[in-house]
Image 1 (cartoon, rainbow, N blue to C red):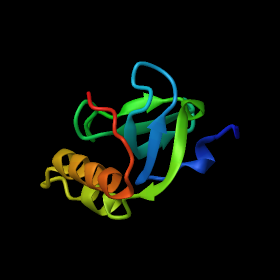
Image 2: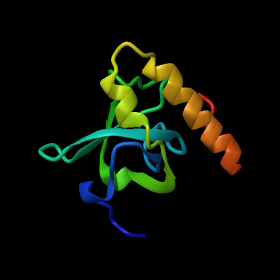
Image 3: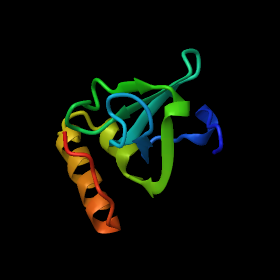
Image 4: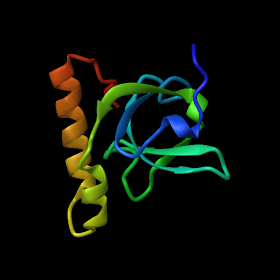
Length: 103
């Protein structure tokens, strides 16, 4: 298995948690902190866009899926980004035939 670092992540990329209580949960990358070596992820439900979960990049698995309009949505603070993010993530997972961990 390849060890990932922050350069492997980009905002809008869908990832899966590989470690911790949230193992198997799908998230979207919201941002990164190079000083703390953390990737900030959100699912629009437990971890909102305004309070993303910090994760060690070694504990995440990158998928081939992404939400290209995420950055545009985040710039417009008047929109409900959590509901949009959750819906986009669920649609993407459903359309790709993956199983999401319900929490």
